[in-house]
Amino acid sequence: MIKQQYTYKFCTNCKTELVLKGHYKECPSCQKQYFFNAKPTVGLVLFNSKDEVLLTKRAYEPFKDWWDVPGGFVEPGETLEQAVQRELKEETGLSVTDLKYICSTPEDYQFRDEIIPVVAAVFTGKAIDGEKVSVADDVSDYKFVPKDEVDVETIAFDSQREPLRQILK
Image (cartoon, rainbow, N blue to C red; front, side):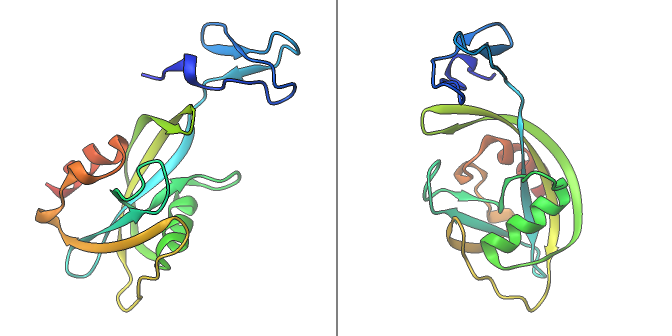
């Protein structure tokens, strides 16, 4: 459940504190409205040729030093598939084949003092043999883990945990 009272605190036009008006907030000064629309994100459960799963360690908050799957926010003009490919390349230098959409999950993403509603699209795919991981962007480390040894409880985001459990069955 989105904690709407904590989402979108101040007007981006005039910096006035916003007022909750049911399913949106409104600026009492300029009447600009802020709806609680979810922002799209993507996550990728990437398998190598040994059927191991790629986990990446987060370099920044939220969930700094937690394990995660590659992913992030969808940029304007991108499809979900383009976003997951871009995020994988930015974070690891890898490319993906056999990309398959699995499901989507809503979640509250806490960033600093705001809670941002997101909907996370989860994909699976295969790493291209011979490509080497080169961590970058917001990743501090990585590891490939055998499917039966993935500790789902160490994964940063709830929106990735349940799909990961289903994928690893």
